[in-house]
Length: 294
Image 1 (tube, rainbow, N blue to C red):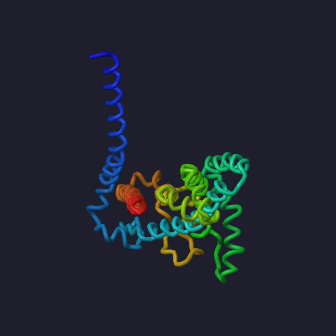
Image 2 (tube, rainbow, N blue to C red):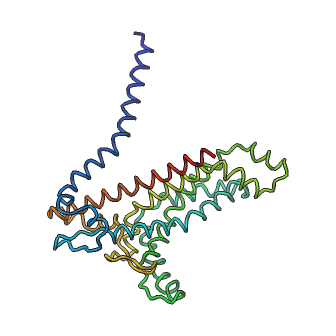
Image 3 (cartoon, rainbow, N blue to C red):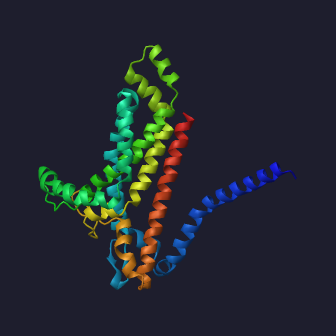
């Protein structure tokens, strides 16, 4: 065997090993979480754990529904705010703005993406919470201390913007410029070209950006935990306090490791978060697949 063939064989095997590692990593994480949750799963039915609202660890009651509901509330509202903003900003920066504006905005977006979560959390406590409690809630004839689902969603939407916006800019950059020029040459307006060429051609990438943004937002912990109130209840409106799953785990894991049932419950909470993100990714992959068929 020549030296070149030996190097090729080693390289190919090494790449297979790396690929296998990434394929097995989610399986290993899920297996570990299931094993750590076994004590709780053997003592309670799955339906009681997921759909019950009774959270009394001292009495052995572990109902995760308030935490699941709070996680979905804050994440969905955050994305309702951030997704159209990111799409419109990406369209403007890639299609209308002068080149120097785009070059100026790229490092700004990177800086926003690199700011630690705790800094966003402090900003949320100092600015967003008073804004929600003193301005937004009274405007809608509601009373709120400010620590609420809406405050968490506003902070989370700001945190999600740089990630989604960066991916959308890359999506529009990958659309061949010849397609847009051909559309304009046939008499389409600039907006019609963007709508029917750039957005349609980049639909797969746009859905991927939203899916990744959703998954990342769902797992955010520190910033959301600082402004959402951390009250175990089923939120009835955006002005109510909530308690998402990541905050539950971060708040209690260290000091509760000595209590087996509580430790198992927190691991089950991690498993729920893992499964929710898995389901979200499957849904977005299906939407991407359907968009590729068109």
